Image 1 (cartoon, rainbow, N blue to C red):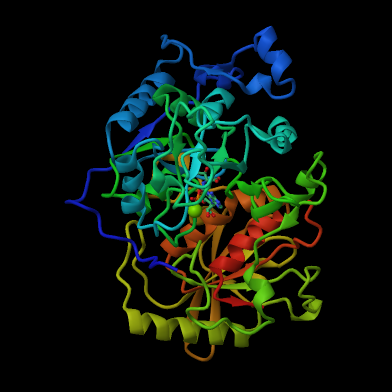
Image 2: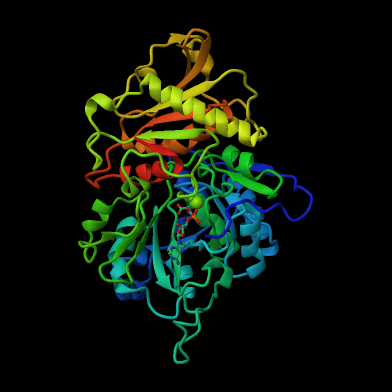
Length: 487
Ligand code: TXA
Ligand code: MG
């Protein structure tokens, strides 16, 4: 595995500007961004089920959509001409986009993000016409029902890359658009996604280029779900962040490979494995990723064993839900004082060794801070006997250093716990609720917010992902990667 340490920015720090994109006025919000062209009778005949996604059309700027289209057009022009990536919202997480057909532009992504260049990027298209321009063969049949059901949306499909040596053949017509080799990290396939965010599709359409875009976080950090998160991570490394408000899904797309038999899920995400199984040809789809939880029972994982990802600075201690495969006792679920002790001690040692400097937007703190993220059944502060120190309202709904679109989808309640004779530990309590969509929506924002508030340790109540019915698999996959201890 290549190093995951972020590379320094190439030149002196850039000035980073957040550009607000108006969402248009309700009820025709989407119309401000564009609309799908009605397929011609011939198109309809050729690809019956997917032809409605052939062409996404952006409107001419007019007084009614000016605040939407002008910033998008400027951003699109920037992407075509520059080699510095630009951040933009999608329904899953914010992406760090660059023209996927130009090597220099794509290299700019790896530099800005500090991402190892052996990790391939997803190619985002506005419509099927753009996707077909990247291919020298028709879209494989296996994907047609998936596209019909889940596109536009949080699903990435692997397709043969015509420009790779393995799949190039002299007989075939060259594709109209050729991906820069840096997009695929040398693989014979590329991942393609059509986002359901109309803002994202219009940006791509106006650039008239497919956009390679990883999540717009610094490598190893939780993915960004607001423009402010992107700013916190990439300030000085990019020039522009389009702000389209908070992402609705909150976890990344599901990545599937239908070119093998049986088809496989490479990364769980916004579309669940059960939803995939209901689609023709995908009944036998298998999971081809391993979660940390499967690597060992309760034991803390050795440092270095884990590929650090989705991680806040705080130590994350994850409690698996009792009904998941690990079968933890109901009685053992709640946080105990010994857990607290151990976690705090370990984190303190780590901090003394590392003396980490404060990052952008982070609060200076005194004393020790423990955070609890609850989901389905934990009581406030995971049952620790606490006292209230600040009224709930003062714990705030805004992160206080961003703009109004960065309202948090949860409340942070500040409490206090008497630890031993002398010490008062600050407790930050976040309730993400029991609805899994709400948990996914708030998860990354919660990890970031608790980091910003100086949490030393974050105890997280996991959700059950046993039945594969919903996006719990994606939530638990990210949490298991973020956690340094799983109980
Ligand atoms: O929701 C999402 O997918 C977001 C938004 C911005 O669209 N993007 C995203 O990109 O999460 P990234 O780079 O953070 O994750 C891309 C994932 C990685 O796990 C990568 O290994 C996998 O997709 N991937 C991309 N191309 C691949 C390929 N050709 N073969 C196998 N895996 C691939
Ligand atoms: Mg990512």
